[in-house]
Length: 300
Image 1 (cartoon, one colour):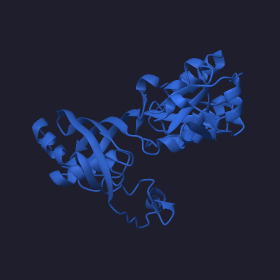
Image 2 (cartoon, rainbow, N blue to C red):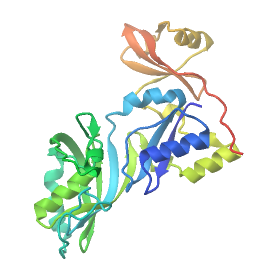
Image 3 (tube, rainbow, N blue to C red):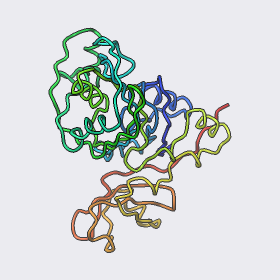
Image 4 (cartoon, one colour):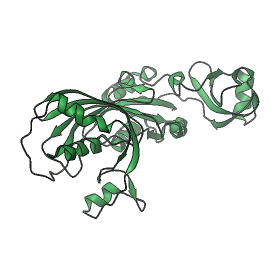
């Protein structure tokens, strides 16, 4: 089974928990995700399945879009609502204008300290593993980009926001740092990811919907149409001869794509068989060859 599936991740599960659930539902071992979501967070979690796990390399720098709530009044050790308070709770009431002014310096290219409970590695060990063992976690600031950060509303000590960020940006750190700036502490109370690259909530399905689709034999409606994947790459529909040459590792001539560096090669409308790279002039070679699709198993 080869494809891309977008799960609407529920709160309380890690991204790896979701991967394991999908492996069991589809009876498929080759499942990976395109960008971790914290257990607290919900929303868009793209999964690559079968030979399409090889496409993960194209999504390491995908931008993400979020909606969420920042709560002012105290900070936590995880920088979100799942952590232990690290400062006394203090009553605070913020204004829309005040929070918008506070948010302004966090837009653009900024230096950000990752949370101690994060996947950032220290001497090869994820920081969260050290933090859970109450070992010292020493991280270095990293450069990130917050492309959009809009405060939508304020209610008491809570501010609702929408953000679009480059890969590697932690909204938990943004919330924590805003609390430090205000002098009262803050943490990320809730977070929902609404998009990763070209994938959005409109493409997403719950785990229950996936299980029902497999049971009913209607998974084609659940999986992302392959031609929507990597929209920045032109599509080529190969005939039998061209498909055979590509699968055997031979170069093919594509004179209509003189300016493209890479193209997606399809056999028919839905079968993505390769990502081909231009090697010289109009000659392309498939550096990534993807096997044909297999029938989806039925849950009994």
